Amino acid sequence: MNWKLAFNIAVTHLVSKRRQSIIAMLGVTFGISMFIIMISFMTGVNQFTEDMAMDNTPHVRIYKPIELEDKKIISIDNPEKGNDWHVLLHQRPKNELPKIKNGMMLMQQIESMPEVLGVAPQISSQVFFNNGPVQIPGTINGIDVKKQKELFALDKKMDYGDLDDLLKGGDVIIIGKGLAKKTNVTLGDRVSVTTPEGNNLTLKIVGIFSYGIVSMDESRCYATLATVQKILGKDPSYVTDLNIKLKDIDGARAFAANLANQLPEAHVEDWETANASLLAGTAIRNIMTFVVCATLLVVAGFGIYNIMNMNIVNKMKDIAILKATGFQGNDITGIFLLQSLMIGVAGALLGLVIGFFISYLLSITPFPAGEFFRIKTFPVNFNPMHYLTGVMFGFLTTLFAGYFPSKRASKIDPVSIIRG
Image (cartoon, rainbow, N blue to C red):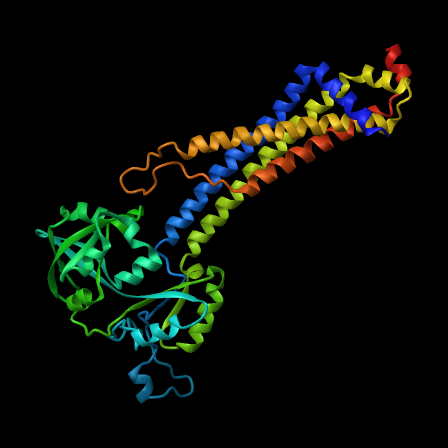
């Protein structure tokens, strides 16, 4: 087969039937551009949701949970014999501190492990923020400011003040935006904090932050480790949590399992276990994204097939003339395959350009986030794989859409077409 001659004939057919060629190309363009826009936006939303949740989530967390031991004094003094058995209702837990034993020394040992990026010690406690006669429940977190800044980028969540202001004086605190609104305080004001044990301390507000998650912004505040230890009346070694960031997040589960075997007294939890509901929601959203985009591509593929089929049907007389002048069936198939591929590649490239342009406009469009949502524009994911998928889809769809009708047309008797 002479491919140069076939190419010239294919171009001649496309140019002579400009309207049909443009309609066929626009069918490809519309399908690819809509695919790019939809998948860029939907995966962008999914990625934003995951990043927002993971910003303050350690890859591995070590803490000491409240446990109810099934040890009964009556069972110890009077062991069960035969069919005897003891029942104790409403057993209370032991009054144990949620302190991690040798927490600071353990932190140094974990930081020396090659797979660990860093470890941030933390003290967490439930407290009440006093707003006149009203007590507002919340959580105070004692942190190592430098490590919290490096590992969890808390400084980038600050709306007012600076995270380092926690280091510039004693008895200072930064609070969530929603909590500041609840307690009716602002930068420079003082807030009275009371622990469940009755300890009370008045702290100066040096910063206001927001994560964009209402449940956190309306209840959480941060102070230095020393300040929280002072409020709780604990010694400088008192630590309730060790938040670990790894170099490879995918190794969190294996790392946590290995660490749990070495620390029987503490509870080691990886981020996948802690965020099981989030991961389930992410999996559902990813499936929905795949289904929507796959459906869009399939519908676009059938549209392209119909357009290419009609395009070939309208050229039946041209096919008859070509066969009458000596072209074989494979030559006819090759000519229309070249036409299909030219339409597909041109339409796919134009679809990518249009899809990228609209996605870009969407990415700079202000997002009505409200007061607490930390996002300025619509989240859009410009993943090169999406564009490569679009090009491959346009190429393969038009290839198949052109092959089957042209293969059928190549077998038609030219005499019957001319006579008809």
